[in-house]
Amino acid sequence: MGRTQRARLHGRTAAARSTRLSQGRGALAEARAQAFFRGGASRCRCGWPQLLRLLGLLAVATLVASVLLANRGAHAGAWTLPAGRGQAIVTGTFQKADRYFDAQGRTIRGPDYRKFEATAFIEYGLTDTLTAILSPSLLSTRVAGPAPADYTGLGYTEIGARYRIVDRDGWIVSAQAIAAFPGPTNPLNPAEVCCTDKYADARLLIGKSFMLGRWPSFVDAQAAYRLRAGAASDEVRLDLTFGIRPLPQWLFLAQSFNVLATNGLAGGGLLGLLSGTRYHKVQVGAVWDFADNWSLQVAGVATLQGKNAPLERGLVSGLWYRF
Image 1: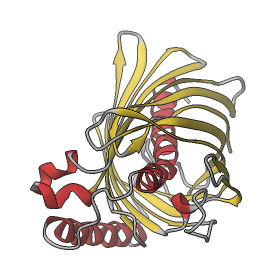
Image 2: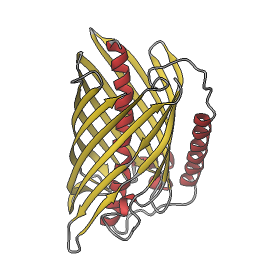
Image 3: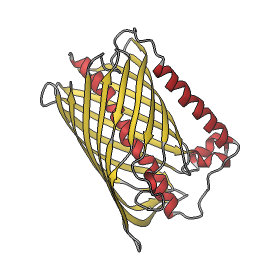
């Protein structure tokens, strides 16, 4: 596999892993904020939120149908794995916070919490254009305070698929649909409240591979609507990744994860997304290909800005295997 192909493959992998990393975080951010900011904006069930939720439901249904009914004879592409090929990414993510963003975006003190998540992200090419996704996880959380709480056990298990729609002149367009099932079951436990609801995630991905001088590079942009069961608000998600390979064995990644809960829509139409619960994270790291089919990943992640959300800092490490 040439450098450009490897850069594009890792670009897709990084984008997929970015999705997985951010997926467990939105529920946690909103749940912690809701627990800390009692009396904040409640979820609206009329007007813009209801309309956007309906559009989100239609998007989920459409993408699931397109994935399941996709043409199985399409040509091979870069963003989906070739038929019969797969990869597994095992990661450990540690995050903590003792400060929060309030409703005006100012940082304030709050209850300390720590979270460790071990995730196995597995992909397999069913056809050259259709890749199956399975991602179970283990979760350990601890919340300090007058009544400390903790949880250790299964986290979310995600099942889904990604279908490549376009692969032309270095541009990739694909659609992804994922259903997630929680391990925690007690919403009254502050350490579990982040992870007790099912959700469906419909995502459109657009990528571009190119050469930056002599270095294979890529950009990847993702837009998603996450339809959440239970009391948590639905979410609009916007993710961006830039990757560059200055050396054959080294891939460097800069990523941005942006989550906007729909609980702010009632206050100002679509612009209300900026006034409700939201947070913006960056992750910077590197992936080292130490063998033909093996890679190591290390990265740092931090919340830069938000509203009604925790100010998190963390580390990510991972082992990648391609088969």
